[in-house]
Length: 301
Image (cartoon, rainbow, N blue to C red; front, side, top):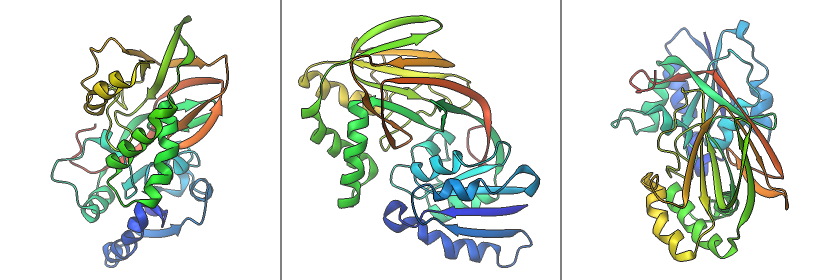
């Protein structure tokens, strides 16, 4: 088997670049072949990943944050194993792999992933775009846009970047009319945010859908009603830790197909960190679509 490392050198304020000497050192006295690609700009990771097919007998490693993993996912051919080495800012997708608590060192994560095992996980699709973790819209998407700017300026932990960006964005909150269709039934909501989740976490560790699983074949949807600033501030800590499930402003759904429309105007959304402005979103779940390589001791099976 050949190991293909696609490294985004700017991820995590350059943290991904530290992987290069570790990779060389690991394979120095081993027979397995390996190759390192450094991305040079937007879309490059997708182009690199698309070069390989199942017959090449490779594992492709996305080395960076959730954005790098998103690009590799949207280039990789079905059946080619994909690993994520979480060296970016957010690293929310790999939280769903349930790493052992002691596994925090990046070098050790790299080695244990190379020596790991393959599992099958679900992948979502939104308007023809594959995503491994989440699509959010409304206030969340605005926070994501703000967080990208804040994260580049301030060397802060990913969750703190999200919190700072949230407070900077709260003044822009406004109700959004959203039409949600599940199993042929449409409901109308005046919402402030909506999260369509495959994984369990986003925003540097926020937990909007605590029951989500990347192996159950379903999206978990969380809608939060438009509410006052005081209510938002009360809900925020609960939303962060996933203890908001019994709040009357929060609504939860599970489905393998979801349609969301905002008839008044296009709204900001983010799909695994990539920003879009659309009026209609059609979600389709692809159960067990991705062969994911994970460390041996992850709880995911």
